[in-house]
Length: 230
Image (tube, helix red, strand yellow):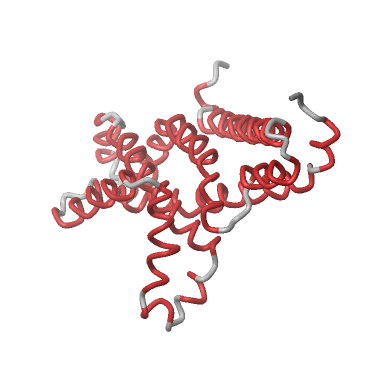
């Protein structure tokens, strides 16, 4: 069988609707999981044993568990609890999109914790000592020295994690959301053409992947513009 351009064009609205779901899930999870991972990274690096243990346990569970398992636990498991079904929480957890955001944000944030921890630990001790010598408070050192440098150090790793995560959003079809992969499969079931919809979806994934890569590249240049040669 060959690629049917007419079939691909005819079904492009359905594929683009699925691509919109893929993008919406990706952006929302990055917006939630990124800050959440940053907060937990502070606990992970804390000198307080309880906070450090919580951070380590969080990473072990959220990063170690497959995102699909977390999704099943939240979408199917929480629905079995009376406290969820009979209370205000059901207004949120009855929606597949909300469950997807919660599950994927937990998994995504588990990686962000380690990325940020690695970035902050890589900040040269001399910079921190110099900042303290200039009279900056520990909070000022964190927000003005360590965190901005850690973001620059960790951006490449976060880019890789985000691109991998974007492609893993194909799992959302397990809880009734129609993403790009699910849209391609539905077209296949209707047309019995296994090549055209999958190849068309693959091309759209490639476009999204490269758009994200270019966006991260722009951000990297912005964050490191002071290092550019004069």
